[in-house]
Image (cartoon, rainbow, N blue to C red; front, side, top):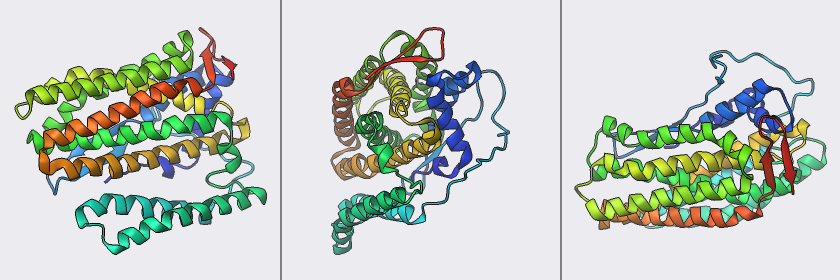
Length: 360
């Protein structure tokens, strides 16, 4: 089960994601600090293997603190002078599209693809088309839909999401299959599973702190490409470790692969987040942040439903084999992201300033 609080944080989500975009439009130094530290930490996922049916628990941990030492326990109340209504119909249609797609993909391989699975998949294009029509009509009527078509047509969003969605797909799939591998393949307990992923968490934190400096020195497209290659290299190191040591692998042997993977994930996420919101108008930054979060959560779920299902389907040939195949597919996707980084807008942060130089 993959859970999260991203879509339920309401105004705080819009404020936090809005700060990330505003930090590159010349806001004050404190806001830049929040964008540099708070946003990368917001996307940390804590996966805890359980001993009940092989399920994997996931919780998205949101951090409201900043590097100045002020904690995130209290969020100041703020109200918009023009509050937006709830796009109930669009939300239900989009949720129905995801359910019709993800549930059959997750259940089909283990249930023999019964008739209801095929009917559900047949409904996906119908529900998706209905979502597009409803969202366009809502925006034409002057309302702000959950997925505003005008925002999705922006160059930064269109090209950014083309890389961000597969990135989140691999991220969700990796966390899922790694936890299953350590638990069912290496017969590790909950503590062992947590310790196994610790190098990735520490490296991700370090990469998040290094991302602003990387953006200040290099063009964001180069940072995305470098980060994606680092993730691919880390995954291939895990493949090598598994092939040469399985089934007598010590989970600490995964550390040399987890470190570059964690650093690369942090760099890719931080840069894509900023690039996606680059062209979003100031008054729609909160809405844009909500769209980013929606795509992130959808990508995580899609990763578990696709590559996670692939892993489960290959388990009968051996957990080690399933892990290697899944990692190889993920590495190929990350290399494709690295190759596609050249399609992103140029973004280069000015050293020592909060602004950016943009060349689209």
